[in-house]
Amino acid sequence: MESKTKAINLPKKKAWDIGFSYLAVTILVMKLLVTAFMGYYLVTGIANNNIHFDSMFLLYIVAGFIAQMIDGALGMAYGVSCTSFLLSLGVPAKLASASVHTSEIFTTGVSGLSHIRFKNIDKQLFFKIVITGVIGAVLGAYLLSDLLDGDLIKPYISIYLLFLGIYIFTKAFKKKSEAKPKTKYASTLAFFGGFMDAIGGGGWGPIVTSNLLSQGNSPRHTIGTVNTAEFFVTYFATAVFIFVLGVQHLDIVLGLVIGGVLAAPFGAYFASRINAKILMIMVSTLVILTSIWGIVQAFVL
Image (tube, rainbow, N blue to C red):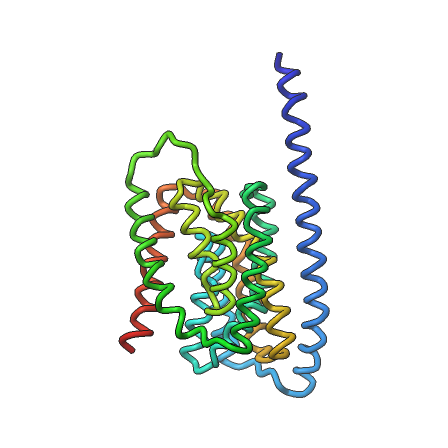
């Protein structure tokens, strides 16, 4: 009887490994292409003395490390954290979003590979969100580059996320429902999340992860899946930014990349080990705090 059970389970495990091996290779190839492209501009920038390795560069590294630790473990807030930091330094919204998205290609790639390694992925959910997420991000990046002011839209998203964060926080203390977890409107959420992420410099995690968690889905697999899909969302949004705005602020990008890449594996490990209830509380608290800060920045400061 045991041998039959093993014979049934083995092909499933192999199918999972083979499928996500292809995904891992795809991420690596896409990252290599961007690395070669950015490497050319980096070498040129250093040769022309356009990149300065000073105290500000160290701050970019620290910001990237902290933001990616949060994002890798909780599935959100890398873009929000980094963009808020850059805006406080006077970087224009378009360039801040472009810089953060460029750095996210590297950080989300490493984070995605780490989540694949720890098997934090829901394959069905991944394919539900990745395509519409990319479409939304491309549209948002194009509109921000040419037409819209992302700063006007972000406060209203913050208000929505504040109520969503409160809902998730209360849900963490409720008894676990016997009902099957749902993934309602996952594709629509991904489109909206990708769109707002490109416009506001952050929002993919808070919008997509928070909504999926509020439907009773596993924090571990939701965070891992959303983070892995984020690589593709970021990749194509960055392509639009580079096409319209060109390559700028490489010192910011490099600092964020170094800090983020160093932190990414630790975040994925943390997500695979932490208690689900604690993770829900941390996610909701983070959403509430970042939302309040966004509202204060928009309407008070």
